[in-house]
Amino acid sequence: MREIDGNLTKELKQHTSTRKVGKNHGFKVKKFRELVEHVAKLAYLNKDFLLFYRGQKNDYRNKADSSTFYPTIYRGDYVLQEELDFRFDKLESASKILSQLFKENKIDGPSELRRKKFIQWSILQYYEVTETPLIDLSQSLRVACSFAQLYNDQPSVTESQ
Image (cartoon, rainbow, N blue to C red):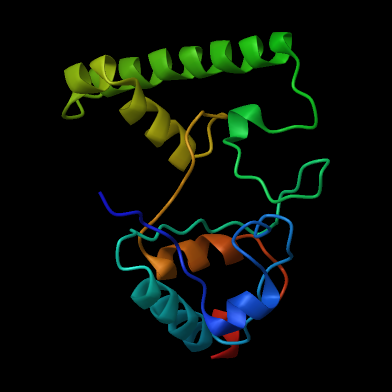
C-alpha cells in the first residue's frame, strides 16, 4: 500500500511546516480570490485528500499557543467534570424539548429526530441554543468565510474584493 503524504505550496512552506502548522499564526490574504487561488494550489498538490474548512472569527489557542478546534461543549481553559456533566445535561434537556416541539407542531420527521441525537444536536448548534460536541466543518470555502466574518467587526477577506 502506498503512503499518502500531505504537501504544502511554496508560499505555505515559507510560512510554516507540516509539523508546526498549529503553532504558526494564520497565513494572511487580502482578497477572497487570493484565498481561492491558494486553496486551489493546495488541493492540486493533495489530490488524495478531501479539504474541509472551518469558519471562525478567532484563532482559539491552547496554553502551548497552538491553534485548537474544540467543540463548544469542551471549550475553556480547564473544564471540570462537573461543568462537562452540566453541559451534557443541558444538551440532553434541550434535545428533549426540541423533540417535543417537533411532535407538538407536527413537523415532519419527529420519530427520526428522537432516534438520532446528531440531528438534534446539529439543529441546536445551528440555532446556538446550547453547546454541543459537534464541530462545524464545510467543504465550501465560501460558507466557511461567511461564518468567519459573522459577528466580526474587523474587515473581512471578501469585503476587499
